[in-house]
Image (cartoon, rainbow, N blue to C red; front, side, top):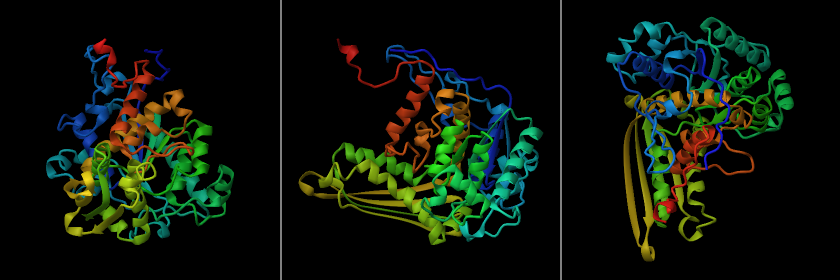
Length: 441
């Protein structure tokens, strides 16, 4: 039964999108938004711009576009800013990334050249293979956090933005697990003041954002807002957070295939995944410590989908291997291979082979756009903002954040249903279960 719609503040004025990292993903998103605004291209891959949502009974035939159903910020009202390790403006950065052709970069040159990165908070130990020329200096990590906060306030004033969202679209940091400094906001702030070696740059940005009430989304696989200190701080401050690691190419295919294999009750003895990538992300992941962060998020999806404790005969002892190899000639064009060893009736073996040739940032850019628009919506919706963690955005991540008492949902079809049902709930529409018995009474 339909309920009363929940309060949502209108999307008045400008939305400022602050990106940490202005490399391939960010420049592709920014250029893409401007291309769509100028009607030079379609926003293919963006759920917020092209997606629809079914409402009511199947016989009602109400299927509006999502952007017409919930009050999202209009693309014309978005302004961009951010930080990067290098001084290149977004035009130069886009050309170096090599994702977009001249038909887009040259037509958008004037717009892109005006967006220049602010110096970034950086510590070499967290990203060993990059050597930047545009970084902040400070006596403590708290000093760096305060500089980031000053940047945020300066950007908001100069851009005349009414609201802000921050998204991490920078390099993968070295793998780490929660330490005592990450337990509470008090221990974390002491760690900032004492230059704790366990506080990474991404955590500095997230803290600065939350302190100023700015929603934060983590598009990379390292630990950031999913530590107790910042996750609980987000709840206390009623600021949306989500993450982690954009689920764009190979892992997205895993979350499509694995639910189907389980639905057919086919067994799995092994799943080998490897890919080659030549962009800055590939260069960073060439270091084993940084790759470990990515390996954990890419590997975790099968464990939760297959549920080996529930189906021990089918999935208890399957072998799962994930590999990424840095191969500069490919640039941003990733090629992936999956070999899946399965078995069926009476244990007879079979195989599935998947070869994907993806454009990494072409897939990730519309996801980044969707996330900033949905996070802005969440901040304007008290019922969502008070939750802190926006689990309904799991659709976009390899390792979705969720409440500490829960396990993450990785089945992409369930994730999409959760997202759309959340939007239906916000607008007081009936949730869709696909039961359908009423049509046959």
